Amino acid sequence: MNKVVKDAREAIKGIEDGMTLMVGGFGLSGIPENCISALVESGVKDLTCISNNAGVDDFGLGLLLKKHQIKKMISSYVGENAEFERQLLNGELEVELIPQGTLAERCLAGGAGIPAFFVPAGYGTEVAEGKEVREFNGKPHLLENALTADYAIVKAWKGDTHGNLIYRYTANNFNQPMATAGKITIAEVEELVEAGELDPMQIHTPGIFVQRIFKSTNYEKRIERITER
Amino acid sequence: MALSKEQIAQRIAQELEDGYYVNLGIGIPTLVANYVPEGIEVILQSENGMLGMGQFPEKGKADADLINAGKQTVTILPGGSFFDSAASFGMIRGGHVDLTVLGAFEVTDQGDIASWKIPGKMVKGMGGAMDLVASAKNIIVAMQHTSKDGQSKLLKECTLPLTGVKCVKKIVTDLAVIEITDEGFVLLERAPGVSVEEIKAATEGRLVVKGEVPEMAFS
Image 1 (cartoon, each protein chain N blue to C red):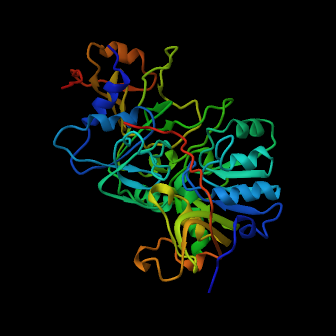
Image 2: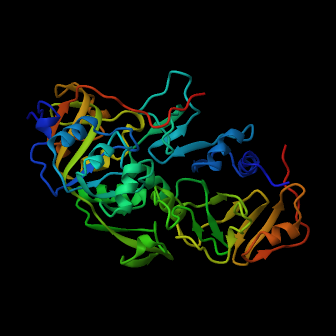
């Protein structure tokens, strides 16, 4: 079993216009920089991107937005991006906003074969529009559907040839749940080792969820807000 | 005198109890971490996947893989842990977080809160706010009592899109500490030098005053 592909360009083969992608990361932390660059280069368009955030103007998913490759964003928070705002106000971009925990759980459910579930978040708000409400333990809950994607693209710290993944610090975030919910899951990693070299007790994402893995070459790892003592 | 943002945070910090797991929102709530009373240990949860959040890193030690929910670089304290976003909101939804402190544009005397969207202006998204308010066992809202032009933000009904309904239990504003019960906004404490009449005038929702209302005490 060897899931290793050469580079980002090879990893994203098969991603076509109009497809739905999950893209891991929180803010700019733990985003699959190399695959995003390859997608920009490929020119693929009309994408629906499920990602907690939408990057900034000149980094992360902002790069795809700038080239009008994204048709719809499904996110919890899309601030910090002026181009996003411009496209949204001009009607060039659709956006669906989802409470962050519900978004994470919808990805997890998609990967785990749970078609829908009830959560309290969003009851009584515009998020509840059109959704079934049911009371559990005296509290109203909304029925939320699972999310899956044609491709899930995640970034991990270490990975092996079987696709087992370990994330670093808070760069785990949406990568772990999203890795489970792609029909094809692509992982880009900073360190790629032979199967057997990672401690099986430390694996976050078991290789069964990952179809393609590659060692990425360079990471900018841009920091959105450097704060120091 | 109306409280400064720091004093609002300082007053909220008095609500902390030893052993609490606490989620602090962006803005004034973040400042609460600076005023944890001596002898009390609280563990901060950051919704992007960390327990045991520490202070900002030393100069030159910032790490792009270690940030808080406000996307600022932070550190982790001994005994802390990292986890994914689904596990993080599992903690929140499952009621494992003892206290949530967050900001708001408006709150009603029923405990409804509006904090995420101003129609006509940019919509940035709710982030984790809806998950937090719907599930937290105990929510304290840190906010200004009135807008810059003097309009009350403590209302009968929210005018802005809601974040959650019937969920806020306590509010600390620049003028008062208020508990929300079935009766409405129950006035617990006044900011030093602020009269009950001034608070009444600044509160559009139903304000309940029972007996003498003490001034907030700051050590």
